[in-house]
Image 1: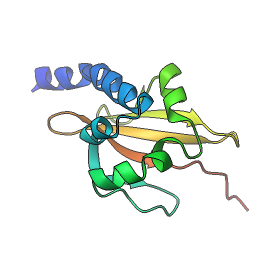
Image 2 (image 1 turned 180 degrees about the horizontal axis):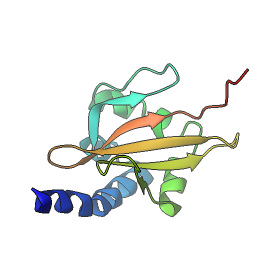
Image 3 (image 1 turned 90 degrees about the horizontal axis):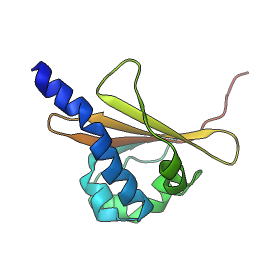
Image 4 (image 1 turned 120 degrees about the vertical axis):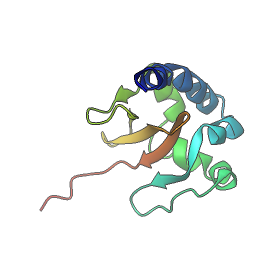
Length: 124
């Protein structure tokens, strides 16, 4: 089992190269293949249930609040500090907040699973 875990951890860079290239080239079909549905969304946006909906909402996921293609070209995802099965990349937005994209290891491979919208502190 240890060899399998090492294989999965080490194959994240290959997954990332495919995912990054697909987003930069706006290859919606490849992005969908590299995603697990439903894709979680935040801040009241409905989750993305399937490939067709991802195709329709591609701009919402990768262009709203940040330029994911530009971000992905220069930044790398970080391994989650609490789980070796998750990576996150954060991209800046115009309001000095961020948009986070999360990737998770499934039983067989890595997948894009969640987009966290930028948030501001609601502290009172």
